[in-house]
Length: 251
Ligand SMILES: Nc1ncnc2c1ncn2[C@@H]1O[C@H](COP(=O)(O)OP(=O)(O)OP(=O)(O)O)[C@@H](O)[C@H]1O
Ligand SMILES: [Mg+2]
Image (cartoon, rainbow, N blue to C red; front, side, top):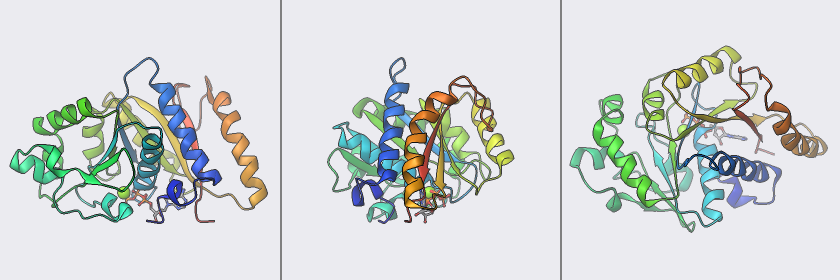
């Protein structure tokens, strides 16, 4: 559970960065009703599960009724981040046509529940693109303020792109210095092609060498936001896409 940094170190700059992302999501919500948010990345291990878990906790902290769904049906891991069981989850709901309500798992955090992936299916893409999956997300959407979807990486399988069409917004997590710019660009393009509404790009695991520069980064975080508006980033941002930064939390 070391990933849940906003619980373990709520006052750290990293936790503050997650709260900044929460604020961005709320701003993105002013005109549109963005309730279902998909979190994905180009490749494995960039920090999707960590990012989605911490943002969801910050939303729940505000009293928003929040649920995270593990849609990484091939390599589910959300349950591990929260120290809960993966027995009974999305695949079981879909296979048995059950109500999702019997599969909600408590996290011990007020206002935050989880639906884990459940048993690993032989046909994850088919399951995720099924009408039943679309209906399931709609049902949950009616009952919660925010639904966060932990999705698989884009470069490996089409699952995330399929799911993005069922979400109101998508966040692309990029391992800063760990993902090739071209790969990140093609992930962003794949999302855009499917009509996804990319509400932000999280630059994750930024290497902050010294504590003093932590604070420098801290201020940059805010000023950069204004600066990126209307400018093209290396990812080819249209100016609509926010850059949000999270430092390495290993310190
Ligand atoms: N900001 C961060 N600082 C330090 N370590 C981090 C940060 N974000 C994620 N990590 C670490 O990186 C590893 C991968 O993170 P995580 O499991 O969240 O990635 P993922 O994209 O969900 O991976 P997968 O593709 O396997 O599902 C974990 O060990 C996690 O603790
Ligand atoms: Mg993951």
